[in-house]
Length: 346
Image 1: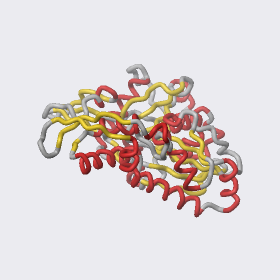
Image 2: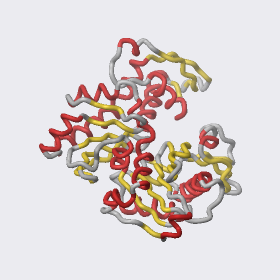
Image 3: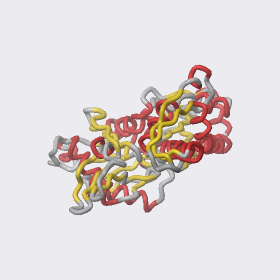
Image 4: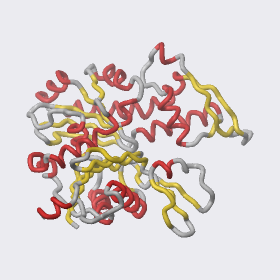
């Protein structure tokens, strides 16, 4: 094992519903790509992976399908998830797979045993020597710079593409957590459903995501609420292309249901938190990570609903992968984070 460790570079992976990020020991974060694969259905061969495949979403001819092999933070299409992982691992190794690496993968805390095994099997199939799984809230907390090793309560809310992870951590471990399959994808979908219902306008997932990023807002703000944007789509009644003007306040209304579900999960976790740790959280605040942390006003909304100060991680999109990297670089000291589920060797 020592020989392998010296000759192979260990890899940390944030295998996300929307994006996959890869950390290589000694080099840092070397890859950030959308979790999308484009397949030629006739030959069943991959045509593109990552950014190139994402550009094909909703724009492919009949014989080509662009798919996201992960849904709600877990593998929905095993074969294509393995293919995607293999492509990314080869890419970070410069196309060479001389020695199988040790791989640490961040996973949602609420995954089942079957889903856990599917991720391990996909990583081994992609060339991993050993597979370690780390709960995403723990990885995100490491990546956000929280003092997880200390005997103090830390609360993190990691809002990804498919899942939102709410966790209270102390002494390198999870005291309690809740994983809800409501996150960025559901927020984008709620925008698409609103436009269909109110404006009779049919839009694709990329357009919905673009609206969320550009004018999405979780909390009223006079400066921001005056903003709007033109949205193009298909008019449901005429079947013809149509452009409508939408405002920030409308989009906030459309997102209210999924945002409320995330807030409720956070409140449920706070209610179950032991008093000493709850006092620490009131003192230290709540840390937001993941792409959802970048939604305008979401930190203010959470603070308003809980009465606790909310911080946004310095690099919210990279928190989980940076956390896997920190564990890789300090494997002996931080190995306890794997105590609940040890390595899976090939």
